[in-house]
Length: 399
Image 1 (cartoon, helix red, strand yellow):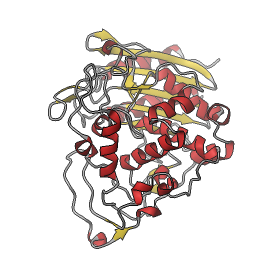
Image 2 (cartoon, helix red, strand yellow):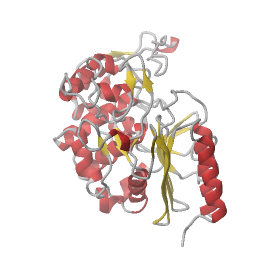
Image 3 (cartoon, rainbow, N blue to C red):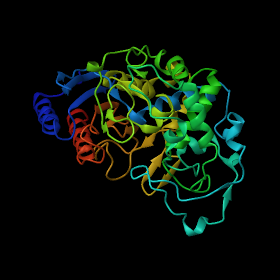
Image 4 (cartoon, helix red, strand yellow):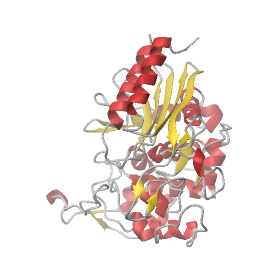
């Protein structure tokens, strides 16, 4: 029987309590070892209300794995190929060509960056971008652009009627994306790109013939019989605020504490549903999603075994950033999965303080969810906490 010893439980509780109130106000942890749930627990508070294992967290970029899973199910079904150009499904992406190369935009300061000397005067044919490029973050597309400013005005609070329809926000944002300059050549190197995953989400939506959240529900959430994962939890009437971990205070765009709506500005500006961010979930359901990828992606998601194995192996690496097909492969040093998870570990992290790591060598799945952006983005401690928690669990469960 897989379980945490009393001493491991004590060390785990001490570690979490040490970070409560400083790095994050709430935390949830779900652990599956060799197919058996070892832990499913919550700590902290949601604006004064105790946080439990049913508290929803803003998954941020862990959303990407759900988009990728839905897309890969279409690959297995023969609807699209990895090396097809994006323009096969989203022809508008190739309407403006060739496209220039610039320095992009810093996602934190939002400052436009200068064009590197080697790219001045160079252009890119957007039809060169394939789905494999999007999945491995080697498309040459920018890491980030302020799509939300092109999508429409700041959204109203999620408990009020939206003034601009979600479909119009998405259309406005995509029109801007179709014209953005590149920041490099397709296939050249890994540049982690939210823009690329927004486009993958649009392609996935078109392949499924429905809005992206509906396609993800049909092809990922429903087959697993998960109850909590959802987009726009307040606006769609899934839960009350007291059941959702709040994130950052936004004094410049939304002018409110972000609570029950997606933290990511671009996902919010696009209507709360995007390929790169927007999903909310409990830790338990994220761990169950990870377990399905570990043991039965073909049975659950319809992703054939060979393609599933391809998704979990390294396809591209730049400066220690290892990329599978949508998955982050654990870095050799300094990874948020810690030092004791195997180098075959795959998963993803989210900017809000969330992570899912799957260690196939040790049959270990860990979903660790926090709202560490609550005190403000860029506060220290999240990486250190992630590394410590994964090392503790690996030591306790892999011996």
